[in-house]
Amino acid sequence: MSDKEFSSYKISELEEKIKDGDINAINKFWEYVKKHGAPLIEKVHGDKENVLVTYIYKQTEPIENILIFGSFPGYNYEENLMKKLLNTNVWFKTYKVRNDVKFKYNFY
Image 1 (cartoon, one colour):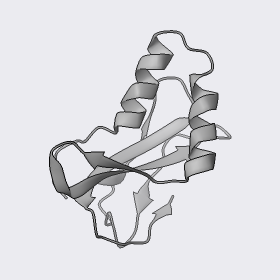
Image 2: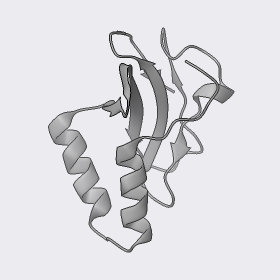
Image 3: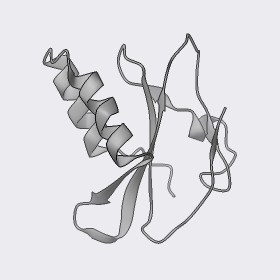
């Protein structure tokens, strides 16, 4: 893992749909997650050794932040704070990792 920020293709697509006024984009996204599971795992274009892993959290009540921690991605507070997508109930954090890694994680 590096200090560089990585962008999930799925989250970027969702952000664009929201900005374009697609009022059903959030519901479609959560339906996708329900069907395919989480975290989101996406191929990195031109990279056969790594994938993008995007942790997502669905906000159901007012919160200030969400932290992801565990054996991976580690215990660094600032590095593992999730971001809220615009004014939605979607919180996310994307990492680039080897495609053969297995790990446990928690939300706090």
